[in-house]
Image (tube, rainbow, N blue to C red; front, side, top):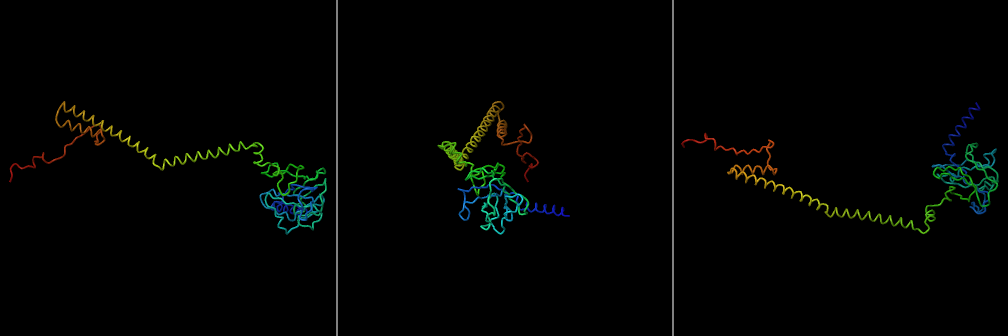
Length: 307
């Protein structure tokens, strides 16, 4: 029964620990010999410890513990009831190892010693969240820091002695900004000037083309060109009609010279109308001219003698 109870407590502790994201806390930097770094609330340059929230959510580390003794992981508890223990995403908090916890929430009851290992324990009292070994050969004014191999993933696997950078993610302070990189590669600003001028003139050229095309469109130039094309098409159609009329006239003159009479002229006129798309019959390739119906040809309508 004791074994089952122990397993149950461990599982519940793990669930609580994961729910509060305690495992996302990292001891990111420790400074042992503080001769030129930050001062505490009392103006003293005390040894300090920095922790970092590597998650994307808030973590409340109240109730956790610091210790430099693996046999006593609850050596220096972090007091509850202080809102400053709620650490936002990718933010840091600094504790001072003064040996006097009565100085405040962020003061530990032990002092840092070279050659010791610092432990951060969860609020369950036995789960070690993170640890950091403090070398004995740290120069004065330097700190032992965990650097992120990838600042996007925030995986701190590179541990080395570096210049102290409290209240900031280690590594980002030493990374050169884009402005500094450009200053080194282009000290006279020639490349930057060429790029800026090219961008400006390129934008002006694009605007010129847009305004020119829009002006031509709204001024009606494209409409005039379209009207010219339509007039050319109509003139060609008229020319074709005139040519068809000349053909019909030639046919009429030939028929008149050969046969004479008005019938041939009517045939020529019908051909002209047909060729000019003015008249079509239902029969293909046949032109039919029908005389208008009249009752004068019916002799029964007339009386031989008047009454």
